[in-house]
Image 1 (cartoon, rainbow, N blue to C red):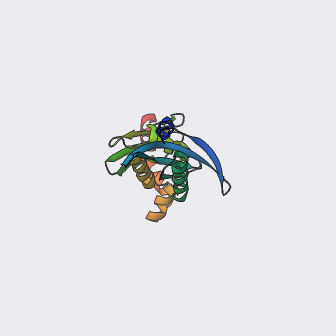
Image 2 (cartoon, rainbow, N blue to C red):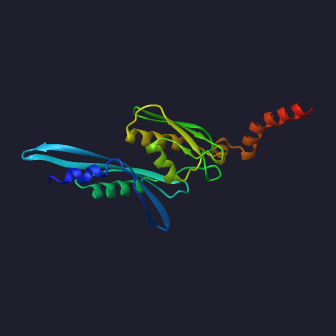
Image 3 (tube, rainbow, N blue to C red):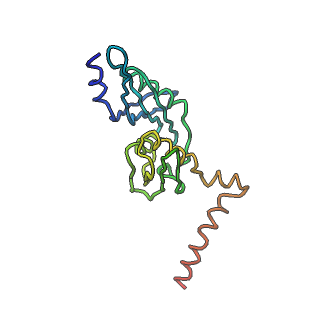
Length: 198
């Protein structure tokens, strides 16, 4: 029992990259954090581990899960299974970034996610970077404004991603065509260009 804390301590806060076959889709598992807790009992301490894992197919689907167990591998396995069950689909622009800027909140955690032009890359902190890599986003700027707790940051990121909408879904909700929505936004810019040339 004396060696168990040292073994778990080596994996603390590390990141794992595993690829799994699940229903024909190749899933990317990312270990965000491992937390070790000790319960003092008669005869010494009893250690347990809590893992936070993000799973995604890198094509617009992503999920997260937390697991607790007496051993690190078992905690990661439980977290991965829960993450697979909670996967959600996020609409991506050109398969590389978000359609628009969003903010997400969870508890004391608050994050801002901004869509970017091609070539920007993923500019984000550790827990949020894991979510974006699993999701398949290649260009995004993200900033955490609240809690630094990895659980709060991941949940706030998912809250923000859930608010992201595609032009198609907005047009369907408002009963309009996609061209109507995008045309109104582009019209002032076109008028300004013509004024400059005129």
